[in-house]
Every structure is written in C-alpha cells, then in structure tokens.
Image (cartoon, rainbow, N blue to C red):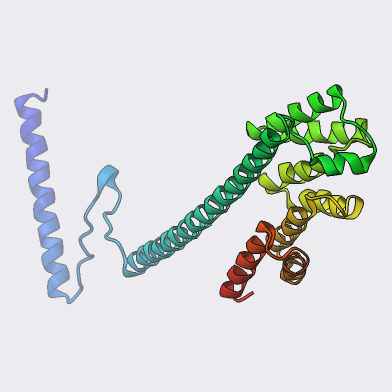
Length: 259
C-alpha cells in the first residue's frame, strides 16, 4: 500500500498526464488532424468484430446445401421403402406358390397310399421300383423343403439325384431342387435345374410346372423375350392345365407393365 505522500505524488502525475492528453487532443483537433478510431476490445484484449456479409452468405449457402442433401436422402429412403415392399409382395407370392404345390403333392401322396412319389405310371415307365432308402432320402429332403430349410433341402435333393440316378423319383427331386433355388431368388440356378428337368425328363408330369418356372426365372432375370417364349410354350403345349393358367396371368401382368 502506497504511503500518503507517495499516493499524492502518483495522483498528481496522473492528473498532469490527463491534462497533457487533453491538451494534445485539443491541439490535434484544432490543427485539423483526426483522432484514431476507437477500437472496442473483446475477450482477452482482442478487437471485437461482427460477422461480415460474406461470412453470413457462406453460412446461408451451406444451410441450403444441407437442406438439398436432406431432400435427396428422403427421396432415396422412399424409393428403397417402395422396393422393399415390392420384394416382400413377390416373396409372399413365391411362398404361396410353394405352399400350393406342396399341398398338391401331399394330396397325391394320400391318393397313392401315403407315398410322396411320382405317379405309378412314371414308376412303371422307369422300369425300377422305389426302394425304402430312396423313399427315406427323398422324404427327408422334401420335409426340409416344407419346413422352409431351403438350403438343406437343395442339398438333400442334389444328394438324392447323385445317389439314385435311376430312381423313379428323380424327376420330382430335380423339380424341387429348382424350387429350392427359386424361392430364395437364386434364379440363375433355378433356371439351370428347371431346364435340366425339361431336357432330361421330357415326359415327366413336372415339365409343365418346370417350363412355367423357366419363364418366371427369365422374367426375374430381366429377359422378357425369353420369359414370353417359355410362357407361350406352356399355354400351347399344356392347355387347360394350372400351369397354363398361371402363364396367362403372368403374360397379362407383363403386358400391363408394358414389357
């Protein structure tokens, strides 16, 4: 703490300095010289500044860009949602078709004494009887198909075909192998297996359905010309059969789609 005497000297010095500054300011004003601008100090002694117009314009541009990106993202989400709904609807159609065919085969099983097999005429044409191991292997793969275990069902049908190449159930196994791939939307493999059934078992009662699924597979793969050709073959070769009716419905759908 300053002593009274020292404090007096200090105060007098500050008073004289103030008078000197006032006199300098008056002198500068009378001489026509302008005083330097007053600068407000911000935090930490730095000059305080206000946002410039360029900075505000840049922020506005960034905001508009973000809004545009948000609109684009919303549009993409809407498109993806529509595509998901379309795929769900198609998957429901596939599962319904599988259920219908499984039910049809089960009804045939009851009519033939509880055996899930091809018609007796097909068994007789093959010249071989269906053994118990064949029946068990076939039914094991078929049960996996009914349970929705499509990968395991495909493996089971493939093993059956390889192990029992002369079986009277081979054409059935070939057909369901194609279905196992079709229902999981592996249309290229499905097309291969259905085509093999058509070529290797031309007299099989499964050929109409296989040819129908050949048309469906081409449709899913985007080859509309081949799809129409296969579907028209179903209608021409198997008139009045369920497969022909399904082919007519798909062709009508394609016409409505403009394809």
